Image (tube, rainbow, N blue to C red; front, side, top):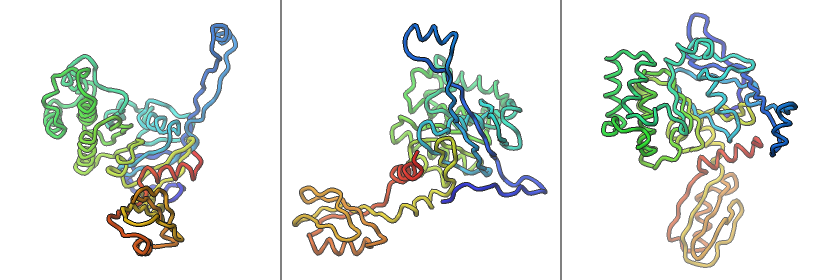
Length: 342
């Protein structure tokens, strides 16, 4: 895991495989303030107070063609602002954003033809009409060749199992059904880049797994570049190999998820069912919980190996069952938040 430094130089003789490149992107929002009450509302008409929120503070990173990136951080860190700039919705105050060779907000029509966007809490489908009508409208908006549209629709319908709900109004769909349709809609025009903002929020386990598997297959088969923002670390683990951590508008870490796991691999958790007296702590091992023959322990492997801890435990009690696990992805991210005070 490493902090972000500068970018590698571009190849002089052509494109170097970088699909997305942000350099020193800054964005500040001007927010009107007033106290509650009618008098304060009238006063604000003539004497309005403002506060300034720096959403992005010299954000720089690059993403290669076909990469899948996990973009993580607490609420208000700047994730959505970054996605809106990369999709051409927002214009930054300063800095450069080059995506597939163009500036998103300067060449937005051509840019949006090559990107797909899925917001877990917003819909791109029309609420009161059947799903297929929304797809047909998107075909016209993106000017998709009819043959390409039919082929993509057939493929997506089969992969995402949405054939039986295509003629159902969106408002009558369950959340899982709607999200599968949202994912299908984002792939109808064969996007080169897919922005996913909380795509599995509120979904059941079966729907989550189905969407993750579909995204992985499309990345593998079509080389789609994916930027995933989510608080669900299972999504991050299932889909990405690299994470970007943003906090208070700054990129704090950029590196492989495997390196993050190694970084947090010094502590192991032991869950033990036993017969005997109370388990006594030993150097490097802490008893977190111990109730009626069931205990949860943590072992600092820098001081005591797991095998040594198990051996010492067996000297104290009769072990009936034992499991060993490392830190969960959520715990690793919480540790990062504490480390950077975000």
